[in-house]
Length: 560
Image 1 (cartoon, helix red, strand yellow):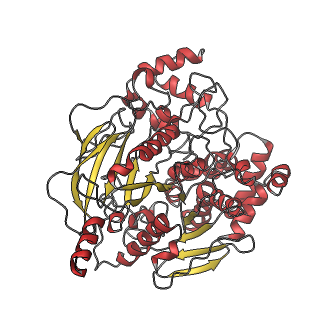
Image 2 (image 1 turned 180 degrees about the vertical axis):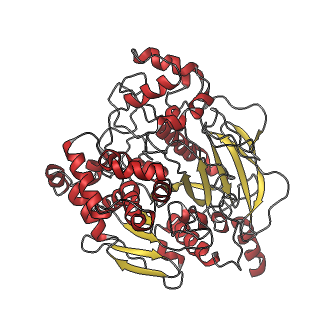
Image 3 (image 1 turned 90 degrees about the horizontal axis):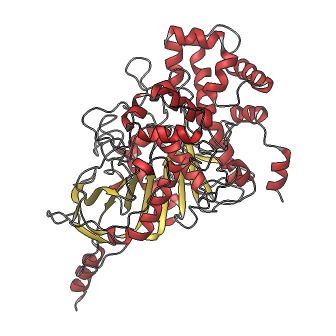
């Protein structure tokens, strides 16, 4: 064979052509054939999309509040995965979106699939766990989990739905409902990926788990979960960690009882309460969601992961996360972890622009601070901490929009995201490689416009605009848009990490991303340029460390 013929064969085997067959692609799994569709990436590369694939049995009837049950019965005909499946029950959705309790679905996007006569080079896999406070959003391609920018790169991309709200995170501290079923859904999806992703051209031995906000908390917990060992090999933790000042309880029985009262179920017997809740339509859980919160959709983190008591079940979480990371008792895989510059500025604007909320916060700050900024309530320590937080960030003058916005932004940003991420990175980096970042780029689009139609800054979720597509947030950027360079930077670094374990392999101009060390709190600022810096919000996070110190016993264990 001459050199030209050999090169042609190599390219055919690698499947690198931008054009794919127009007919519906089909893959073959242990449960049967699955039919997908052909889509176009942001830069015009064709890729295969298989959407709405079930990875577990429908969690309805007796399976409500129970761990996911694997699928065992093959489907009779070819499964149609040409469109998104359903979202898990939640409010806010209009008729455009399909919502159902039968929502344990995932999407797989791939540049090439193997066939009887076609060999391909298997691709590394990037798995995305969506945000939403454990009560909203999904992995659907039309709800801010679109694959079009990621698929400019040679990677297999998977997005996952998991159960939300009370249906996914109710925990009573009893054998009937020990909790964490939404997190166990994620484990079931990761197991499905290990068993099936090769059929889609993916490498099961090279899986990177990426999560944002609630999805990032989940990702960090998978690092310590006994159920998740060996299911992934790198992790990207974006704006959320379980190592903050909020506790990880053994149960949230009071929250379960509140849900029961709202739906007219008895609470004197846990067994009777759960059985009653099993009979309620899933829409009732979504419709009652707002009433589950204390004030103005706060606390943002209402449902929490729990350290499950041992009733003989497979436990997702069997120990305290912060203590596990202190001791180095976690999967020591390479990590990317970081935050945005302004994080949760949105609630700060909401409270200060609303006269009723502003006055209530001003007059009852010591009561509301633990709810809004996620620390223990109704203790002498919480009152002291509330007073110190107000003094440090807001002063003692009456709250006003002009004078208090920056300080209240810091409180929400640090209390909800920043401090937990700071502690997570500090603890994890003692035992494994951590590439820390601060996303600071401000483009034309944002999740918060203030004042007027101007983006406030780089707030929570804004970095996702350049990683994933969500048509109701921003358009898909083209090469002439000012945001194009940021899209290239973020997707190149993230996919390079997923492929090589090192974002520097993206070979971007000016990129020199140095991991965090014991001596240096190094981070990459992703703004108009890529800049290596030291000391991410050091003064602010040091103040939080003083208010919420690690216990001396745990610190001692970390150094043993």
